[in-house]
Amino acid sequence: MDNQTLKEVEGFPNYTVSDQGYVMSKPRLAKDGRKLPQRIVKARLAKGALWITLTDDSGKQHLVSLRNLVATAFMRSRQKHERLRHINNDVTDCRASNLYFKNARDLASRNSREYTLVDPDGTGHTVQNMNLFCELHGLDQSNMSKVVRGVKPQHKGWTATTN
Image (cartoon, rainbow, N blue to C red; front, top):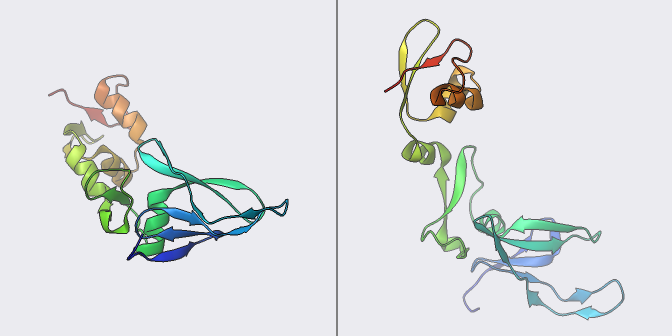
């Protein structure tokens, strides 16, 4: 635990977050008067991320993503359309030096399929990112996916061609 930086967790003054990827509770008194020692808060792996439970001043518990706490404390603010990623792809490694922001549109483009859609005027459009395409054209992504799969014949006049 040498060579680390600790910062208070925003909104939870009884906790500090380390740039090494963990959260510590501060020594404090419990409601019943017992002394609670400083300790590392145990993280649980669920839904592809580490989660911890923090208790606020009123006693309410909050389930919080560990990587988001580390990023909030030690990195720049997240921009719209950015996702927090792990450099080494290990979701249990939440060190600040292992986290980076990736543009979600780039991720979607890399992982997406290619579709050919026809607008109401009959013009064909090659689409590589259905979410972005629907956002730009005021279409519902769920309905357009149904059009592509053949579940619906059209959505707002848009159709899909079979490849």
